[in-house]
Image (cartoon, rainbow, N blue to C red; front, side, top):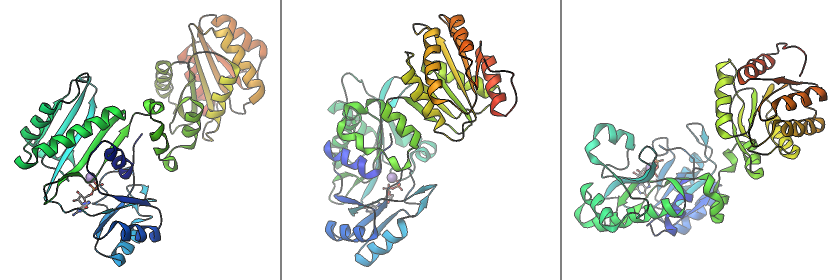
Length: 387
Ligand code: GDP
Ligand code: MN
């Protein structure tokens, strides 16, 4: 879950990182009032989930009220790489002596947290990595011990921070690492981390990605998702506790177990189809859960056919079939379904489906056969009588 800059800064502030005071607003009048309160000069900043706002005209300094008004008018509604600006962050502008870069992220290949620091801040870090790789310092942190003071100072020193701000940079790195661990973030990045002429070290920007799967541990962060830009079906699924990801095809997919669902996506794509979603129904087989899942899939109007891929293990296929039959009798789907039942009690499960002779429901034995059938059905081709 990506946070807007100002939300990230609020998290930073809670962990002792220095940030400027400011206000989030959604109208020009509120922007002007906020600017008058925080005091000029102010910086008017577009709040969108995409970097490079400055270059796109989404970050502007204002010395007085008329300028603040003009910038707010220009930036609200601005399109930045496909993201429409609906919120502005107005903060008191900082004087900048130097711009650094700092981030903490998870290095999945090393299975360790990684701290990155550079004195070449304010520009895209990928660019620094390419042109001045020697100016980018990367240090893994022992996740059990955390980032020690010695290591933070070492990173600041070896990274080439000015002598007189080594302690300040180490403080910032320590606070950033605390944000990353205590808030269950996947990424916490500051670009630029500035040094002011008074030699204060301060976060001028914030890019934070929180781990959505850990959100239940952070009641205070649950309201932070950018619901305006979220897929409405994904939001509904989240509320229902269902693992659903919207995709852009026309074949609805449902399976039990994340691994099986992912391979189902591959097999459908391999058969020439385009999946409309990922949905993991998890274990269990009760009709209520199946109904809920089917309703989510069908809420997407692009769906022309649905593939149910169930591998029976502890969950028995005959139980799943009963759940499906109960659910289908209630929902009466109008698009064709292909149901593949394999594993524990699969023969009984397919028999039950056959006996129920539900309209629009076709039984398949293997994953490949099911994929071929659903792709044909989505394309409007006949695959023979149901079940
Ligand atoms: P980004 O373009 O999306 O990364 O947005 P940033 O928040 O990083 O702002 C872009 C650039 O605007 C920064 O690198 C700074 O150079 C400049 N900037 C942002 N805030 C201030 C400020 O308070 N004072 C000054 N002088 N420059 C600022
Ligand atoms: Mn930035």
